[in-house]
Image (cartoon, rainbow over all chains, first blue to last red; front, side, top):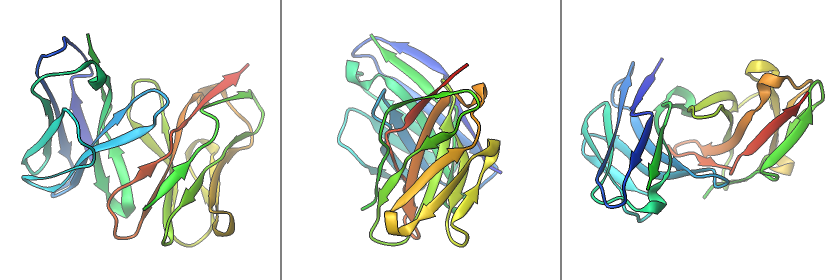
Length: 111
Length: 113
């Protein structure tokens, strides 16, 4: 089975500061990887997905970017955070039978 | 494109009473359907899924859901609510060959003692 490691669990950052959230996957190779953002009352919004190293698709225009430098590593970044970037960020891996495995998430608060 | 509708962001249920969470979807092709549960500050855990075959699907923690194609629905039920069922529940849809899930906005379930 797949295991996803996400860190940090919580993060408080000032407006204008950079961001780097990391996600690594164990137990599988060549996975599809996803970054979701969850805001209260809005469900889960797909931000980025990747089907392989260096391959990134963006779902919505925003202040964030993603990279996949290794097969089982997915990074979410920003050069300058905005207040609106606050939220709960979840990394996910597509496992067998079209099910997702989710990481435990990062609670980001931009102040 | 797929989409999911979950009505009622907050759902209150008495301990021991029926839990019913409604999910309707739109999909141009036969869907794969999922229910996930999320406890505070945690990731999502798969409760159950429908891909093909039997339309009544049983999941973990006593939950089940029935796929009704004519109603484009996949409602989640549990006969008797337990305090530990307090969490947020998400319905999601994808289709064969599409590697993305579309989620509903979720239902926050509160269990009243």
